[in-house]
Image (cartoon, rainbow, N blue to C red; front, side):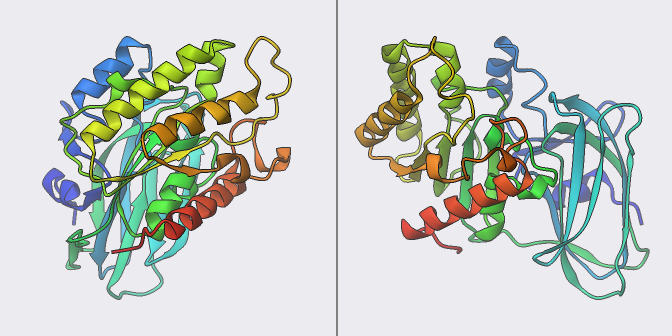
Length: 331
């Protein structure tokens, strides 16, 4: 059987909407139109439509899952993956490329027919349109219940977005969401900084837990201007805390970067940590010490800035431990 667009929408999670495009295919939405306009006005065009964190989540008693897809937006990363889980275990990943040589069909067949929870995590590195979603004829599927689940909002830059994990479901933010089996919105945007205007009071998502992981791109933007850096971070948290007064908010300090001691035109990176701790304290925001989250070794990074697959995984485990110590638990 081929699912119609409403059926696909019923199994889509970790997004705020699923829309039918002019060609009849579906796309997945993680930002409001207002937010996308803010990003567009600052030349962040390719990143917001990407499908970071978005998941197709359903109970299914058949064997075959197949669909077709194409790329409608992309980041600077030329690869993508779809990760398929049988229950809590990843059993398949389609890794391919966003250029014309990349594969555009997904197919998997389970070894036996039985009811199982299926989750398919969509690519962080691009936005897709999807069609011809095929399941076994005669099989049954139902959306996984979301009743009462923890709601988690992850805000940040490219590292939150998911750069540079080989497996899209192993970014630190998605790792955290999987651990708590949370409903989750990934609001990471590659290259982004503290900017209060990017927050939308009308976002149709009411998080219980929020993590914010900006700061490293701001270091490059404001150079030695500590007051501007502080002011932009303060303004961001003023608005965030006003919008979500009941959420548990955590500020993640930037992870280590290999060039932090080779940028004489910028403030010492240690000042970034000090300023952010001041900002977090002023807003009653709990601190997660990102400086300790990923080993300070190039083997855990792709380029000395973005954690690789293992770096992202280690980062996620560090954040999970910090959240649990602060009283966050799976609902």
